[in-house]
Amino acid sequence: MPKPTFLDIARRAGVGTATVERVLNGRGGVTPATVEKVVAAARSLDYPRRLPEAHHGVIRIEVILVRPDATFFARLSRAFERIAATLDRSIAVHRTFLDEADPAAIARRILDPDMRRAGLILAVPDHPLVGAALRKLEAENIPTVQIVTEISGTSGAYVGIDNYAAG
Image (cartoon, rainbow, N blue to C red; front, side, top):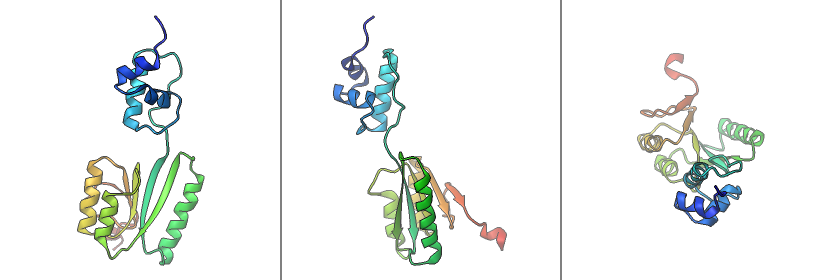
């Protein structure tokens, strides 16, 4: 049986040959869902070479913080900067500061970031608008971690002191 061609893989995956070339040669610029379709098509045709992992590209994690002028949040921001410097280049940590007195702006940022992100870390106040936005994000299976303040009615991981237990 002859070796499958990019055209064979493209037909099986329902994409163009240029997309197949980008995926199989690891050039990026293809959505993770399309990468998965192309890799699955290549595997089903027994394409005779090592296939790429399902996801290539940068994994973006956004950290939303408040009060950059406060010592605690400035130190927390610097800690995330140091952590980001130790990570593989395929992981990018973006820090965003928002006004803690504007929960509507925080909720908008949670729902409508200016980047595609793989996860979200929040150090923001508990507010009904923020909670509603976070629940929508969680319903989309975007991993979230809350630090400092646990947002009511949400299921994301929380890292911080248990204020009720602490008294």
